[in-house]
Length: 87
Image 1 (tube, rainbow, N blue to C red):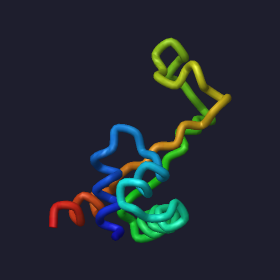
Image 2: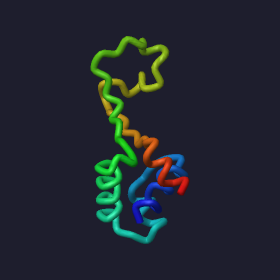
Image 3: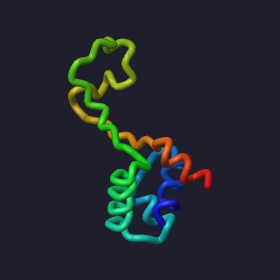
């Protein structure tokens, strides 16, 4: 099931645990556990994009409208995760 969740993460334009749960016909808590395991096993990592020392300048930053207001979490599939998907 972890591989199925990883594939859904890869294929999604927007990652939603509830949408993944619906697609795979699983509970949201099971999908939450799968995310935790994928992180623990090194297949994905979560980045909250919180920048404490920014030198980009707001005019060039894609997060300028939400800077220091809302942290945008992103999921990144690691090289290890990519290898699992290619098996």
